[in-house]
Every structure is written in structure tokens, then in C-alpha cells.
Length: 98
Image 1 (cartoon, rainbow, N blue to C red):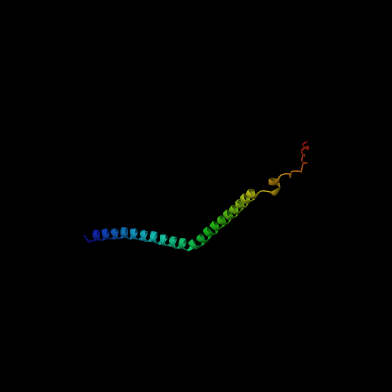
Image 2: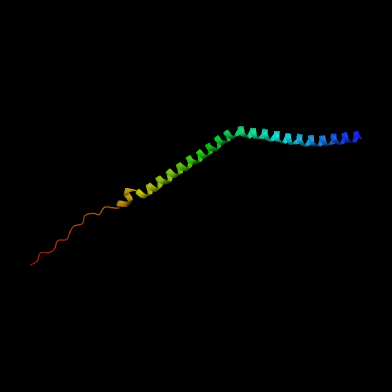
């Protein structure tokens, strides 16, 4: 009677051991993946900020160019607004009254 009981206990121990071992291996892989990603975050963060900085600089340059173009269009050219100067015309004097 002892042999079947030992065989069943051994089989149950093997099943539980396999389950615990695979869970441990999965947890260990997850921890290693977490550590790898954790180490790569500062580099990724620096990269993201450099991309954001580049976009902000480009947007600032475009905004300045648009502001300059609008200011230039608002002021306009002096030659366009002045037009030709009128020439003096001789005035007609009234004939003397008698």
C-alpha cells in the first residue's frame, strides 16, 4: 500500500513543482524585462525631449516669420501709398469788374 501512495505523492509533487517552476521563470523574465526597460527610459526621455524641442523651435521660427510678414504687409511700402504728387496748376484770375 505504501508504493501507490508514494507514487501519487511523487506525481503531485512533480506537478506542483512544474507549476511553481514555470511561474518563477515567468516572474524572473518579467523582472528582467522590467529592469531592461527601466534602464532605457532616461535615454528615451532625452530623445523625446529633443524631438519636442526641435518641433518647438520650428514652430517659433514659423511664428516669427508669419508675424514679420503680417507686420510688413500692414506697414506697406511708402511709394505705394503716396502716389504721384499733384503738379501746381495756374489759377484763373477773375476779370476786373466795371
